[in-house]
Image (tube, rainbow, N blue to C red; front, side):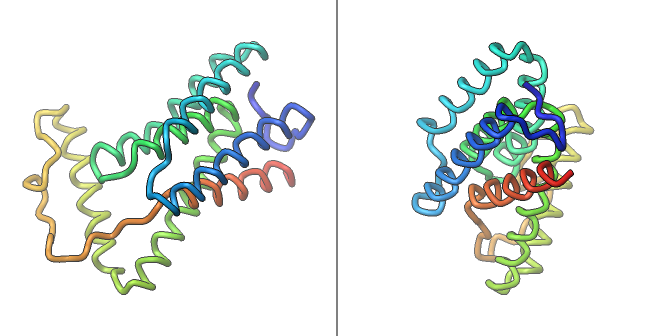
Length: 188
């Protein structure tokens, strides 16, 4: 099941096609309603795992699902990210396998960062966004290093709540990153 970088046979085209179409649907849904629904993510995850079983590569599929989902689970827990984003990323990992999943994760992260910084600049919230990123990183660091003894809360690190909250739908960043990753895999 793992799609090796630079290998685009019919199975790889199908797998990339599935995640690109599903992430496009998720991006449009997220733009419209600010959520990515379970009716899309859970069947996509289940189908990715079933495809991995059929291709005898369940280990790579599950590892990639965990690896791609974990950062978004942390964002959900500590930074107000969406659970649908985490489930979509796990589903993408289940389809792409470990090697292509890592490429996809990097590309998605870069696209998301670029989109967030552009949105922050456009909305004149650049400094507020950097403060928020700092708050998230310090809170995560404290929770991890204390082995959970310090709970993630606004009290752990001061946050200027007078700022307008900065949010953005993450579905478009996931789709854009997957497009970049697919092109990278195709060209390499």
